[in-house]
Length: 266
Image (cartoon, rainbow, N blue to C red; front, side):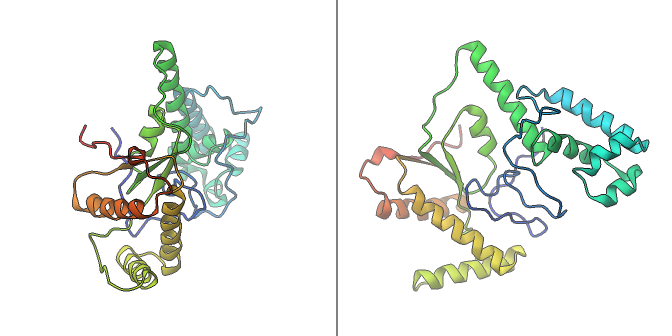
């Protein structure tokens, strides 16, 4: 099986994607890019030429292999298709094209920003069909439920299982670095500096990410239900302790049943 998306902050060589709606780092959801070319919408565009809602992953894998073979053979039509979605330097040296490049082109033809996005769409469709045939379509939460996790590693699984609420990531690594006393402004500034230095992130990016994550907690205080998905290691537990304190003082209603802590060991 392929490795799961990592929990928590990304290592220094990864690009941090800053956005205004969570899930923010999900491993592939609303990503930034280093290529500089235009990114299509995260929502499939339903192109009449390529996209069909009932995409079959194996079929798309074959299309990617066929495209790669034709492009490496300098087929003009294949190169034209690649040129719409890949950097020009790759098209100028088609013999260096990889399968991953062809898969990216196929995904973008179908209106997805990446191959993992296309694969996720196919996975969800397959699972939904299985559930429908078995008469077991789940009703696990509501759209106004907020799911919080200290990473993106379970987001795809939650969506695949049938959860429809909002996914939010809160991943300030409290088990690392200083936790100074003082005002909230001083505390957050100290945390942002540490994350920037420890993870090789520009301070402006670390601060922007921090603002989004902490602001999301304020939004979650208005939710009808908050589900916090945390394990039993110190990284998770210190973040969980912070979240429990936060919601104890900011939750905009008094129903204790609105806070859920699933057992991550099961």
